[in-house]
Structure formats: C-alpha cells, structure tokens
Image: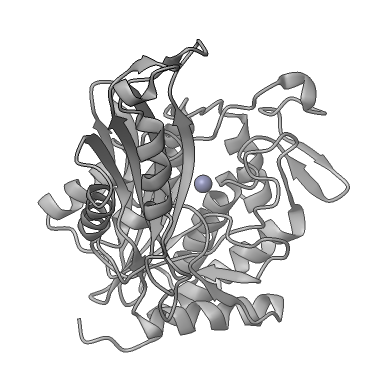
Length: 381
Ligand SMILES: [Zn+2]
C-alpha cells in the first residue's frame, strides 16, 4: 500500500472526536498482517478506543510513533468545496478532514515502519511501536493520557517518541517542535456587595477590585528561558451578567489562561496567581484546571537524527520550536523524550483542509530515514 492511498482510506472514516468510527480497527488489521503485536485498549465510560502496537526486532531501544485518528467536526458543510469525508485529489493536493491534522502523518509512519521492517527482514536492533488514539481533539482524558498509564502499569518502555502533528507552518521541513509550554485555565470570582448605583458608598463594587486584580495579574512572570518565550497570561472573559443599569453587581467572573515555560511548574503558577489576587482582595474564589506541564526534549541523539533525516529529504534545516498549543506530547513526555514533526499545518481545523501529495511521500521518506538512523546507532540499553 502507498501512503497516499492509505491517507485517503483513513479520511473516509468519519472519526469525529472521540470516535474511532472504524479507523483504528482498520489500522489494526494492517498492522496485524505485518506481524505487529496489537493491544486494542478501551478506556472510560464510553469505551474510547486506542491502539498500541509493537514489533520487536532486537534488544535495542523502543521507538514509538504517536498520533490521533480523531478529527475536529467539519463545521458548515456548505463551506466545503467537497465532502470532508470523501477524499479528493486535485492539482497535486489531497483534500478532506484530517488531511493535515493528522491522518496523513499516521499513514506515512505506518508505511515507513512497514517498509523499514521489510528492508531489515525483521532483524533490526530494537522495537518499533505505534501509539494511536481517537481522543486527542476533545477532552483527551481517555486517549494518550490513559495509554501512558497502561504502558507504565504493563512495564512497557518507550525510549523515543515521534508525534506526527502538523508542525510546519508553510513548508515541509521547516519546523520541529522540541517541547511545549504548559497551560492552566483559571476561573476567578471576585466578590463584593451589590447595591444601588446612586449609593455606591453603601455597596462594595467588585468591578473596582477586578480592575486592580486584572492589572496585578497582567504583570510579567518572567523573561522567557533558553528554549521558551516568556510565560503569558491572557484574559478570555470578564463578566458581571448584569442586565440592568441601576445595580452595582455582587460579583465579577473573570476567566484567563496562563501558558508557562520551563521556569515554572503549574503549582507555582497557581501560587503566584493566588498571591497576586490576595494583594488586592481576600474576597474571591479561584478554580484552576491544569491542561499540561511544560516540557522539553533533552535527547540530542534524537533531535540530531530527526534533523538529519529532514535535511536529507527536504534540503531544509528545520527550526527547533516550542511555540503553539498543547498536544498529546505532554503526556508522552512523562515517559520518554518526545519530538513532534508532521506535515504542513496551514489548513488544519479549517474548511477544505488539505496537504500536498508530494509532501505525504516525502514525510514517509523522512520517517523511514529516521528509523534507519536511530536503529543504526549503538545504545547501551
Ligand atoms: Zn492534531
């Protein structure tokens, strides 16, 4: 099978998050045929589907490719030029939901792995594994996060992991993600005492406190670190739900998100936020939800190997970046070094999502080179 054909086949599955809709089952069949040991894992009340497959060559390290077959909903179908779940090839481009994020990268690494194993006649120094989930675009509770717990419990080790998210802004080969910022969402309630707008002295206006609190919260956290931009707090909502004009409201609800670099743990961010609010008022309630800690890949062998493979195929020297949102790499980074590299992400989550066909083939070659390079090294594992 060729990677473009497999990409098209995967796009046909209507796997809107967190549904697999047959996509993981289909992949399992291909992997089983190619002698992979397959663990079909279901987690949570709704039995969210995941697949962990591996093939052991020799004693060396375990190299894992990770990705998600679930996609975001297509949105307004009238805005698409073709059916998002009927792959269309036109002018050297493959269109469909998941074309960029990230069914094509999955097709590329499956084909690269099978080709590599065949070339080596099953005799290579290590293990190749695939971690696939259908719960990345949504809550992501019963996807990779749960698979990592399972791997720990089963004492299955992974030494390197490549996540195939679309990391390139415009051109294949431009960018590797070597880490990500952490993220915490906050929901803050500043309380006061409601009253008549004509008698503010008889009320305690929480809006006045809120203005001060927002100012205090907006102060810089740091100046960035070696690999990361400065930690940043962004307000997403300030709300009193006040329908009338003659009432001083009793509370103000403020929502904000903090993206933090490797100078901080999420617990430290929460502490700082609390302290800043307390500098202004004690009358508040704060709820925080951690989406992920920041992480950075420290394996030079891995980064060099991926850079070399990318340069060989694309002739481009990739930039090492920690920009962007969170991904499943945050869970995988708990067990091994992780890098992210996939296709061009320009159209991800958009209507008429697409990738260039030639890039699917090139990505497959890059992944193949990467396996070649990693397994040609001597490890003391
Ligand atoms: Zn994705």
